[in-house]
Amino acid sequence: MTRRPRPHLPMRPAWLCRNCAAAWPCPPAQLHLATEFYGHSIALAFYLAANMHGAFDDLYSLGVRPDPRALHARFLGWLPVTRRPHRADLR
Image (cartoon, rainbow, N blue to C red; front, side, top):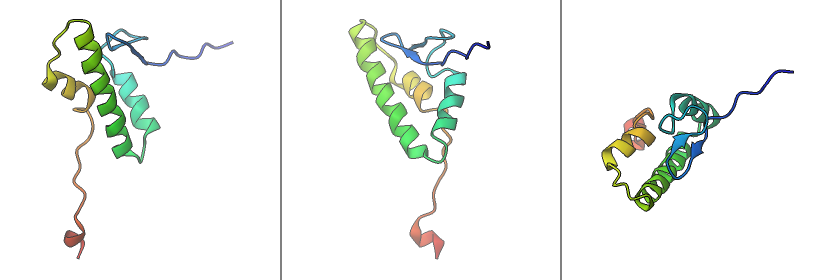
């Protein structure tokens, strides 16, 4: 019997990975999220932004003053930034 790999999920309120103890979303979690949300990049951005907001609340409740730039880079900074053409550009 083969063991299924443990998922890389956040452990709240510290926002560390339950599997590898790295800051969540860790690289394996990022890969999983990118795969799960493939073709739905806006939904992924909203999901991660909501988790970032939860991390702010949780960390403040622990007495930690989180660095907004660091949390933004951690939760949203790894997403690819692409520009969609405006309708006027398509003419």
